[in-house]
Length: 272
Length: 239
Image 1 (tube, rainbow over the protein chains, first blue to last red):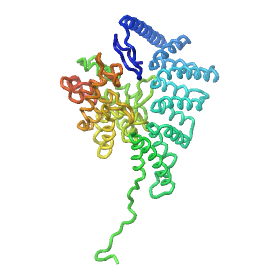
Image 2: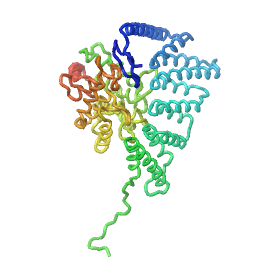
Image 3: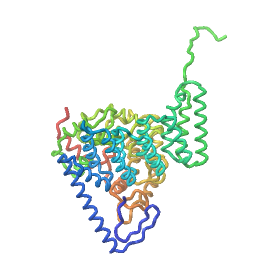
């Protein structure tokens, strides 16, 4: 969260003008913040102390949970949770159902944290570990989560990157993802991240684009793409996304020069 | 990376730094694809940590901890369809990762060979188009104080600082400077240390009087860089 301004300064945050506070209220707020910071520092100290002792109890998990709920970027706490869970899951006596349960609980905690900070590297990274470790990951739900967060912020690259991971693991068809980018672009032409993703999918879905020489299939795909891009340029002419994609498309439609025939006339000969 | 920078800025002679373990750690942290992760306990791996590894190797004068060929391979594999660099292959181009890529290549001595001719021109085109008034890090995002460092540094490393509209940049940075000091990320946003540092860097790169020049590849002042050179000249060369 952004810092609170000091005494008496009005600030516009997200378009909402804050009312100037009295010195008294500011002093109280400052005191509250110091107490909060102190509590948090104590929590971090606890996490580190337990970790250095190699504590793998439920109590340790609980302390970590409180810590990441206050600060989702606290890597150490996530890594510590991973160490505890990994050692529990590795126990041959641990049934698969227990592992599944543990992973589900972790996903629930992660979802709460990602709401608080949708751009936390450590949260998305930990979620990737959990779904990787889970005996029965629900990839549909993971895709749904990505849909939700991309609706909130279509430029959230953490979410786009996580989506690409889910797509790989769940063997989602490139064709379906291409459709998804189309849906996102139709929603809003100014969606650079969707255009970018489309640029990586298009050549995979239509390998004809990469085959040299004239081919009808490749031409058709390119024409359709050019039409889409043109629509975007007309609708949002000041938006760079479509223009950059257009330039990339043009680069793809260039046919490389190929030597077809090389000949040499004998000395003294002339072309009849 | 930040610990070494801080020591140098404070004028430390690095005699208390155990260099070999750091270099050995880098070897552990570089992955098969050439990128680096942050810690042995596990983290994501991307251009940011690769940059840190390059900067560390450069500062210690010891490149034995990093497979440079693989590192360059990862960087070039992260070139996007719009000619700038993402955090990794297939990922969206971004001002921060572009700086990390360009600076890493510069530190490894591969900048001229890796980014020459048309490729350099196209990257310059992307970088220059990140300026509206100030700079932003991704296409169609609002200008943000810190990109006055990430983007402008990249341009400087590529020898194209003259392509910056200094007046526009200057004007934008003045709007993100707050009444109680420091810089926020956007106009009328509260200040934070990161944006305050990069705001000052933004002015430094435009040769604002009274500010020490920056060594853009390492992101420390030239004064600290000179000190580093003096410290390293007293060290035995790496075998």
